[in-house]
Length: 188
Length: 151
Image (cartoon, rainbow over the protein chains, first blue to last red):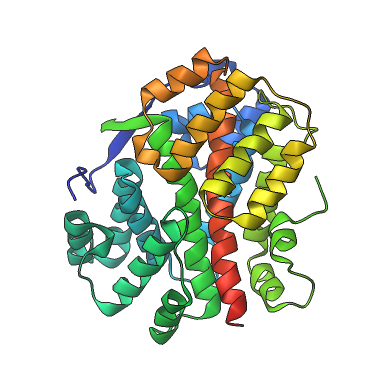
């Protein structure tokens, strides 16, 4: 892997004109608020404000999928998001979610292996099971097989937790496509 | 808001099915997947893309992503709309195919081509959300299908 993956904080610049916040409607302001405090100064969210209804519903889904209180540990959701983002080559998404994973787990060796060798990196069995599931589901078309689910089950994941992991990976199939095709990361 | 839940409909999930229980255990995610669909595809919601363009783009993403059921879902709705501007639609479909298949290959020039075809920044954002949403949806469909087999 040599796509320049990092856990350093990155900024993101849009390729087309974002919404001017000074001229934002009440609906646009509400959509920005639903997207979290970090959205206030983010050009990515300002761009997505062009469609405030879509942004608002997507942010509510994102929050449920990534921060929902029940089920799969937050760190495992972040690992699924990170593997998918690496596979798609999304340097910005990877920087954010690998950083969250590191903050939660301190597993620097897992992140280093993924940055060096990609989704197929050599990992401990539990992380390997998550990465294989994420890489298969993230592929286009998805290449998920029953065996990916069985391996997670053998590692102790419940059906609910496996479904939560699928939600996280699917959410980043979406997020990566926005981040990669509407602008690019830059040094902050 | 439509009463239909598209993921249930596409997977044939009914009340009492194991997958119904699995989805209802995460009610907010279930709800917001549907309200995202409504925001992007409800014909009563104004967007700078025609309904024809929205459904045609979604059908193409589903097709590239190998989902027979979602290709049919969006294809039927596309075919129920009137004809579209051929040149503009061709630009839209070419772009969404790249974004669905290999998003890292899309560039600033691709957005310039969409602008030349008449898409405003708002139309480009809505189109991108549609591609992203269907990319999400096909993966939920794929995972639930396998989890349903293992209930």
